[in-house]
Image (cartoon, rainbow over all chains, first blue to last red; front, side):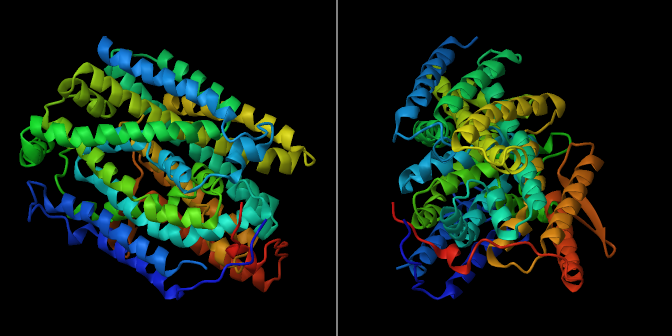
Length: 69
Length: 503
């Protein structure tokens, strides 16, 4: 049922990208402030929502770069 | 009694119940076989896996417990957003290896993998028990969510929970994993509709985001203890560790593993890690419903009731009923998957490993079906036994336990350096220390303040326990390797971790 073991195309260094969302979101000291507000939403909240998008892009990049042939 | 809401609620609930029984005929397989009942034959493609894993992870936790914490304690509740941000990149790296080795060797549970990798029945048993026990408070959280929406419609007491329990139990029993997978599609559509309507309508009705946040700020300042509008410096380490710890724990839960193992290919798993964040945005919006409830002037001591009461107050009855059905179904889908996953664990790693080693697949499926009932009963007991101010702490308690399986499961995917008996001791140390920390708060909080080098660092107890676990594991590995204690047989080969599969 199994095909031959797949070969990696991209360099495994791409996996280091997982550090980007970790650093960006796990340290609230960097973003726990009310201003600047966006449409009345405090920075603390819209900053983290923005990271939902950034993190998806990062994961998508890893997906494409590490695609197995 | 809110009749309009109740009417719409019942219609949708009946619809998915019928769907649940009908699911047995979907992608026909022999349901008296464990791999068919418990993993739906590993045939789910990208889309169904997306709904299934999404249905697995976005539960009453999301719709009731997270906004409840926002409503009662403020900014801390938003940790759920970074949690779901970091989880996918991390597991993007890890899960494909897991899927491959599971496919290659026919593993149904995480504990099957540990048995194959380390050849240690005791360690496998420890992993299986942890999974089963950690799942119970998580199922209990689902039932609490269901209780909250029913109460908002005027149906109080314990009996509606028992009714929901029986319905859930029956179609899980007959259809296995196919039932929640099919219902998850309906559930997600309903949830997305609810979230989109709420994020458009509520800010208009409540005077815009600016007004919502300002009212929430004022209301939070008046609660005891005062809630924080944005995370305070004292909360930073708790916020970060809760997010990180929950993320690491997420895919160690048996039910998440079940969702991943039922995927039809390695690439389906990878693609899903890149697609699942679509849910995280909805999660953030739903979390903010807690603040909207504050802005709408909802007053309740039962924080789980905040969102249901908000919907009753701000929406016509029929829409509230629709939203409640979405929440209740959003509780029933994961509860079903969780009980199936726990049942798989019991059957494979306790029943077959210790009692009937020659069990046929049919016997396995029979045992799993019965155990799925017992696990749900256990969850009911948990609700009654451990009353919590915040339902979310049930998920956090499960996290403390399940995170202690990380060294065996995740490190085990990459290296066999760790000694099987050292992993067992590390697991034991982590579990005991985790429960001890939880107990010191009177079973109320999962945050523990550790006094280290003259500093007081508050953090999610799961992380402290995991650190101790890893230290113990490393130290004893060095010792056991030095005295050349038997290492057990490794049935996996390096290539197994990259196997691709065609279906």
